Length: 292
Ligand code: NAD
Image (cartoon, rainbow, N blue to C red; front, side, top):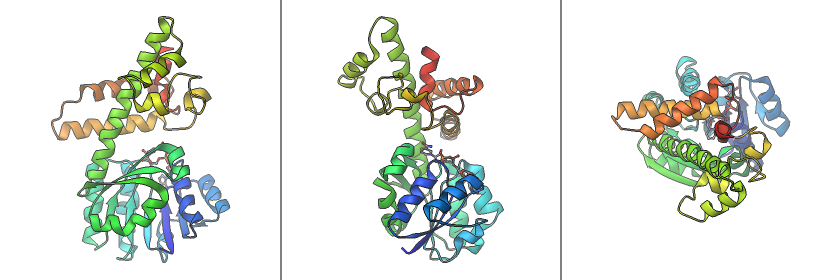
């Protein structure tokens, strides 16, 4: 690939696009935010003033947008699909509803364009280090076509199934993430309230049957893990509002498939409370604040 388009240069998109740029591939970049455009320009990307101009001479288009309505706006309302060359592969990496994902992919297919849903896990650090996990839905042949790009941005690439499957896998993952983060925060507080040191308790549980990703990589208790958002006043990382968005998508998915998800519902309620308490822009491990 010689040149790609990238739309959505936020916390995740900018470092993802930058990793591609660093390999020598040119990047046409667009974002609604002037700040994001300036950052992209400083890194050496060719910035564009609208999404249509991003399409000039590109081999692939990657989108990393906040939600389903922004994806619908770009592809359907702004009719971006009409201007896309049929050889261009679209990699849609935002976390959105599987229904919207399928709808937009179907529209792309009607134009003869290949589109993959490829949401990611690994957070801003993973985006910076190029070791994201991709969960891909669409055709396996298209995944192969995009594999050189996936390998630049990530180190674990999974084919989940037909269009929309990547989003379903991502929502399942994030429901479990929310549940074990809430459980970890609650448990650490229980130990501390009964006289245990959170560092010692974390070490014990990490090496016992309670071990999980939140304990190992993202400890929510302040001071336990120096590199975790908990030790930086819960700044940066994966915001409570984004987790809430994903849990609402989980709730829709559960309703449509008549799946019982009581733990997911409780996590949704807890993250709604965090937002109502004014903590929407803190990292999602700040759920610990409920128990401090
Ligand atoms: P963000 O809000 O930092 O970035 C989104 C960017 O999209 C912003 O710069 C915004 O200006 C731009 N944008 C919005 N509408 C646009 C439009 N119509 N045209 C052009 N640009 C537009 O969000 P983020 O943290 O980068 O997350 C992006 C996606 O990745 C979300 O769907 C999120 O759920 C998912 N995600 C985030 C993380 C994380 O840790 N932040 C981890 C995994 C997945």
